[in-house]
Length: 75
Image (cartoon, rainbow, N blue to C red; front, side, top):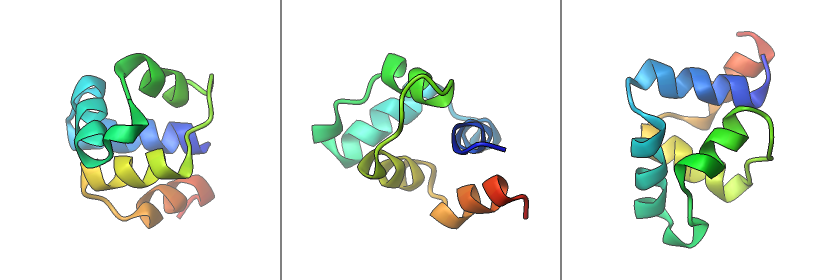
């Protein structure tokens, strides 16, 4: 599983929408200027997600970054 697939899975598992996640990322770190199209592009492998975006996303979903790493390496 790729990182973007693991993130998409974590969002699906949370029951949240991409709009909710993008808004929450902006509440955590407004300088990221996240919107649904940027998030969608990252989830579909059309753009890389930055480290700052990844950390804010994990905080938004209230998950440990290891959750994503475990999905990527198949744990």
